[in-house]
Amino acid sequence: MSSPFLSSQETKRSLIADSRSYHKHPAQAAVEQFIRCLHLPTTHPISAFPPPYCGLCHHRHYSSHNHQHRRRQPAHHGTSSIASERDRLLAAEDEPTTNFKTCNDDAVEDDGMEVEVEVEVAGREEGRAMVKRESAQERGGRQLGDGELELPIVVETRGVPVYIYTSDYDDATYRQLVALAEKPFVVGFVAAMPDVHLGKGATIGSVFATRDAICPNAVGVDIGCGMCAVPLRGLKRSHLTDGQLAKIQKGLKMSIPTGFDSHDREPAGAREATKSLMSEREPTSWIRDTFDRRHTLQLGTLGGGNHFIELVYDESDNVWMLLHSGSRNIGNITARHYDQLAAKQTGGTKEGLSFLYLDTKEGQDYLADMRFCQAYAFMNRSFMIKAFARVMQEVTRKVPDWSSTVNIHHNYCTCETCTYTDPHTGEKRTEDLYVTRKGATSAKAGELGIIPGSMGTGTYIVEGKGNSLSWQSCSHGAGRRMSRTAAVKHISQREFVQSMKGIVCDTNPKVRDEAPTAYKDLGEVMRNQASLVQVVHRLQPLVNVKGY
Ligand SMILES: Nc1nc2c(ncn2[C@@H]2O[C@H](COP(=O)(O)O)[C@@H](O)[C@H]2O)c(=O)[nH]1
Ligand SMILES: [Mn+2]
Image 1: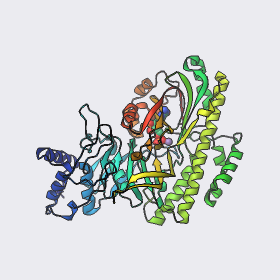
Image 2: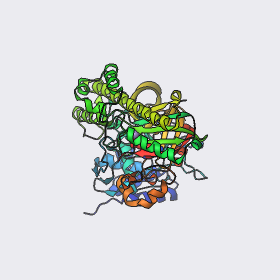
Image 3: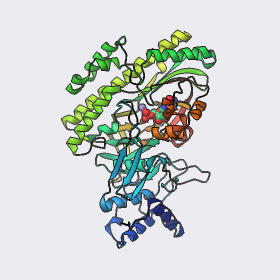
Image 4: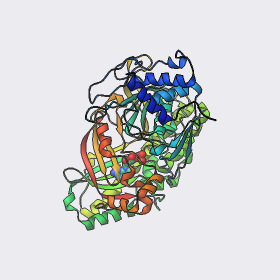
């Protein structure tokens, strides 16, 4: 059956042409063209949707009203981007559903966040999400004279607006963000960090606030995943010989289990540590009944995928220890358990955006158990960094400066004092809300964060600027540019090996899906979040260890 609708690309092209030739706002052109497609009168109620209040200037913006913010200030685009307008209108008409056929090739149980998807929206649009890219202008971004883009891009939805700190995202990610912004439990706005990319049901690189509810799948299956960095006292890059670097790599692999491996015996202090976690964090009977010896044996283990251990050096040649890992199996099964409860309680689907009300037993239980898993993840990183320090002391006789430790989560939910503009009333409010960061780093004023790029490109230590327009957050990495499957297909082994030249690491073909070119450009990611953080240190890799 032939569709009365234009393909999405045709629609966008013609909307842009339409808006340009008549000096009309693109969103107005979108409404008119869509109504023409439907053969409806222009007074049809679908064109009377009130846009929410702008968090940047505290006004509603209709198509006739547009204004510009100063350069480098967050941009606003009057009404939504063309794509958002089209999606909103489609949704208003007949609520299309998005079917994600996932082929999750991530073999690591607690690191299964990236999926490659084929997208089909109500049979009207098909495409491989990972290869679709659109220009900043098409997305609603305002291109400045010298090629710079005003950020964030503001996308209006039927719920709260989405503030996006990049123009580099695909259609499926865009739709996932809009779906989140239209959930009734989301307050104020949704922020998408510059490393934003598609996640399993909830977008990686998204930050949102809630008042009465919590969404277990938005925190994700690796509860408390995060980063730890510690400098070594008086150790310069130039002090390290090739032989020592090789010894460090070997020492790390011997003392920290990776991939599916656990410790054979309980590491020193692990039993006491988990005991005190239990008594201090007071998890529910669900964790108490589930947590067993295997979880104690996993304390101080890395996992696989993009979890990593690195020896790095900063701009003054000082050497640091760095690692990335989370809550391993206990976080994974806890997340799945509560996601199922959420689907039951509020009638959603598993691995979607099902939520729990915080005034229910299940909501309170999730909070308690999620906090336990966060603490476990923090402790997991502490155990590994201590093992790392022992290797460093053995090889170099140098010890860490523990007072400079940065150990942070990037998958978690916490109660914070937030300032935002209510998109429905236009009122500026300061309120305690639950902030969910799914692949995002807290960036309160003066707070230190860690933003890794890839196994070849290094990492930034940053200081937060406390920007309330990102819920005081920044990115948690560079973000994937290619799915794992696409990376293996498009990046040759030769290219992978070449990109890791000079770094002591494994270039086993099994790690190729982690090649630097599978990730977005970290420099661009950092430029896009100049209003969120400032750089304190730039760390570059000497040794990299991954699980496979
Ligand atoms: N310095 C390194 N950074 C890396 C490496 N592998 C991945 N990455 C970056 O980390 C984030 C973490 O993503 P998450 O969603 O799994 O938490 C990722 O986006 C990359 O930018 C590495 O080996 N070294
Ligand atoms: Mn992580």
